[in-house]
Length: 533
Image 1 (cartoon, rainbow, N blue to C red):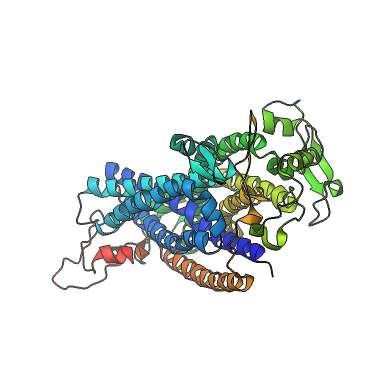
Image 2 (cartoon, one colour; image 1 turned 90 degrees about the vertical axis):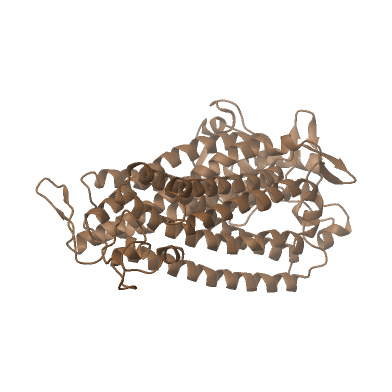
């Protein structure tokens, strides 16, 4: 067993799992804040119901994200102590700001929003949610600043073999971060859009299946009512508006991720040319973009790769913005990397058994090549589904097809897949560096670190394997818990977040008639705790 490989698997599994919660939290929080703002301005009951329902799912995902994210920072000291020692003088500032400023603001005002439905004035209550959402955006910004420094180290000087921050402004305005932040935000909104679309489609389909809604001779919906609590005409408005909002958000988000992704790609060609060359399986210098390439699985020899379908000029456009500039391929870059950083790892105890081994500068091309295409493919698929959904629901409801409903529900996973594939591509494409070197106009900046030097020297492979198995098992249990909670409240519909709609008696002295515009009225338990838990 190799401690480095096991540590990489552990960090990869826990980080990707945690990152599945992050985009939904950021995107859904922003959408819920906008919906509550519309309710505050219009007073329409459907927007209150939307706020409560989507807010409930937002809270479930938020707390699960907190639980799974706690592990991340502990891993730096436990499994990656050499890495932490190397980057500590730089990472200290953004990670401290994320934990002590952004997260505290986010969690504090989210708590006020949860328990302040009746205690706070409506405008103040709405402001609490917006502050919490802005806090989550700043939290993401600080994390991306830290990660972007690993991709493109700036604002530091090497002192006794360690980078020391000398220009905080350069670190916090790193051009890599300034492009990655909006790209991540649009990706999060794409997740939220797909989430709204799939769940709303399911509920509209249920109303059609149960005969609550029918279609007239002109093909337009005739919204009905049922004896089941909450299944009234306002309930129909909740789902059709949620679906169309989700579809619009998904389409806008895809356009945003495409534009920011193009900017990010051009930066990668400058800062990490090997990553982008491997993503295109561009083994030789040229201008062509590979639509499909094949090769021996696991091989790092670029001569094994054959481009089956290639479009001339597109690679040059992705890299330079024109169609004629020749872009260096993997073979040329590998020779350049060997000349700049050496052919073998230094003979230093920090590298353990890997000291003196030949350095493999080409990342696993199956991961970079297909990860890049999965990121784009899943994102495009979600946007296309949103466009089709807008067309199919133009008359106020969804088709009766059970298969279309299932496709809509499973389509929720597409933007999640795009986010995960993009994150994996970004991180694994940087190998063999944990801190990538920064080529500049004056030559090679010597701020870089090989991944082989980053793992904790005092931790054995068996210890890391034990923690990997334990954490993976715990995360699997948490996954089951989250999915069961989400499914339970999704199937319950708006009533699951607004028990007042069910007319549940508690105190016989209370007025039995609930006012849907004023949560907390009627025979019911304290709706604040019901909403929170």
